Image (tube, rainbow, N blue to C red):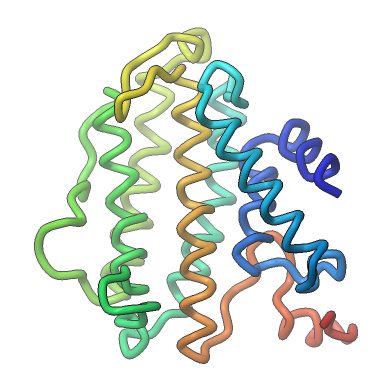
Length: 228
């Protein structure tokens, strides 16, 4: 099972491989992921693999064509927006504990992180990029800002980073990454926080949108029995 997940990561690309992250976060309804000793072992092994994998930037999967990245980015952005749109302002304050990020704060962080990573990587200046100061906007404003910055990023990127430059290295967050690695991390960062948000959405007694597969409710809506 672990080997299958690792193969999926290696062969499916970062966006498709991020289903591993979604599974750990509870987004998957696959019967093999039912709670129990096997799924716990699977979760632990995948967490170790991801940790080890990304400690060594030279080994990780990277994009080699901007067109491929933009195709995946568009799909990932739509998934992020589907999650955002299902969060009412009344639930935006949901957090696991007092010091934890709220749903609204996580949504705003994902919105600002596009501009932040874009600027840090030297691609260009996009706003918003600072989620640490000021209040979190209402969810409708977060959705609008995410839509705009994602669109601006997708238009800017191919004008700054041609395909032949994606092997070039740069310093980011104390590490040396290739440009193609940075693009992978932009998508994986989104998947990472969407997994956290899915848990909070459930805690707020709301139904999250399916990410890499149907939720329990969507599965039933298809006329199929829900997995336990």
